[in-house]
Length: 181
Image (cartoon, rainbow, N blue to C red):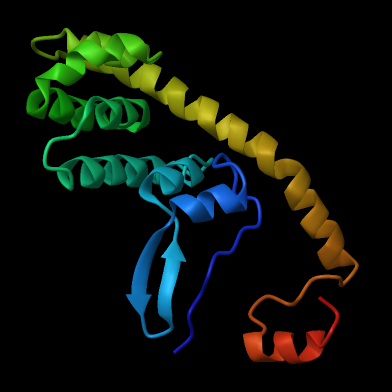
């Protein structure tokens, strides 16, 4: 059965590969004990131009918080910095009321608005969604800037036939590389 791996020498937004490896988790599988990216690093990697990634990030925030018996201050601040759904922010404030007091440490105006709101009406929700959309747009623009030169370099390499063909079996890649890498 084929297995697909996403391997990055310099993962964006998480520092060096060595640091990301140091923070990685380990999973046991048929191939042995493999390092996989940590949840906080995966959240950073998911801050892309793809809109669907922001739902994934919010899901990861929920999973991270619920996996902790009692999230500490640092975990709550991390969650508030990385939540991208209004309902998830409300969930955090309801479950951990002390999180409302941490909002002032984070520059996300939409969180300030809902942390002090009793009820949400259409007007407030619309304003909050607009500010949240701006947060997402800033991440998307940063992602475009990061990848633009890399994508162009890959296009040039592909055009000059200097890349391994997509879908090439690993065994053939290893056999053909004999001493070239």
